[in-house]
Length: 319
Length: 319
Image (cartoon, rainbow over all chains, first blue to last red; front, side):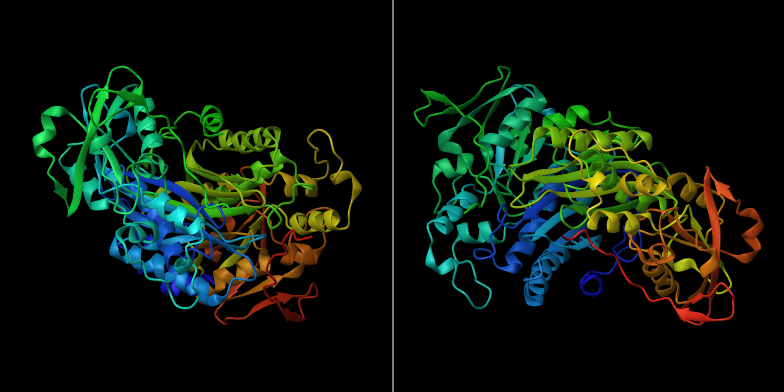
């Protein structure tokens, strides 16, 4: 299997001096840059289900989880490392299609697959993705930089992760059809099965030093906003009417659903006019403000009442 | 759990600018150095068994797998990243002891735990370790540098990994005793349960540019020697009588047993006098020579007959 992966993997990029085939990969980050490192599990039964998610979508989503963390720091990906453990019953075809989905996304974002590990799995399919990225020294956008008075923005739209999960759980027939790779049709389906990491947006903001804090929304808006507030020691008000909801999803799914790869960021109010309506084609929405008081509140559309926005975490793909 | 790990993890080291608590860790490799990256699974039922291996030993062995790959490049570890998925039935005590074993080894080799991922496991305990290391630009010791005529050396002694595994499989009573952490008594037991990565040896060889190729023996001498020969496009003769066998193990276990963390390296014959009997207290044994012909042979103690040394891979901890 390692030989198949080695043949399929992209050639070493500028940063990858030595890829698959030694005890370690050798990577040379750009001069004057710091290294960004992120690791994310993709476990069958937890992050995906084989009867719901085709192998190409599983491979795509696996890499998106890592790339999205690089995007959230404003970084550029340098290389990916894939640890993959397979039970004996997985057909070679599944593995080939998984790698196809993985490597297509890797090529799109110029991220060579430079190493990893393989093993027999004692149970279900297990993947762990590591992505290395870089940012100029001291310029990575952290979660801890939000200040009272900063505006809060989100990219794209939210809710597809949980909305489609609920359709899958309800047994929506056409997802589980057998045969060839299933093609998503609606915007929500595309976002669930083939989410795009917002690398260009993150980098655009970092290059212009416009964002004071940033995070990706993999565990849901309410949870990730809480992370920014905790690390920055601030609170937030979110305007319910301003939260962008993906067509086909509900507000509650947009507020609390995880498995999203949009970016949540803050910026000084003086920067508001420099934040465009779209960055690299992705809509940018103002959704609220950072406050000195530590609470996180959702303000009703009439702008008169408010309720606490509690972090609700992420629903796993359990049966 | 993340908060417990965050509290237990060492403070950021010189290279770790930002550890646990953001989308990515931020790492600053030493100036003029390249980055080394390795990932290794430690899966229950494949790489360890809960009834055989205490949690401290599992944590120790998990990190050793990564550190040993850094050692095999002659590198210095900079930071570790741990992805850990646990089924619901694992007691908190097990996790605490796992982290204790992991972090004790991390402190010994000044390797801060700088990030990772946590998840619920759909089945057994799953760990994936990533270690980042560094070596001066262009100086990492690869598998591909062996030349015909080079001498072949191995550190320490071999065979404990498989010898103890066989005792465990045979139901040796005192390994599976319940209660407090089980203390290994013999050299073979210590090597199996608490293997020490040969970081000082690897670095010593790299600093003096004495080794032409190097690898660690995690998958067994016969398999790893084949890797060096394939990557270097050479063959090898191994002198059976020269292979160092750990007390309590057999020659066949030393030749083919995996789960070892000794180093296998090659050096030009002119360097032979500069390779001492011990490096950093670890015995160094000459075991054979690299040849132009691609075969790998085991030469009998009478030095007259030889047989092909086939790679036999590694026996997993399956029931």
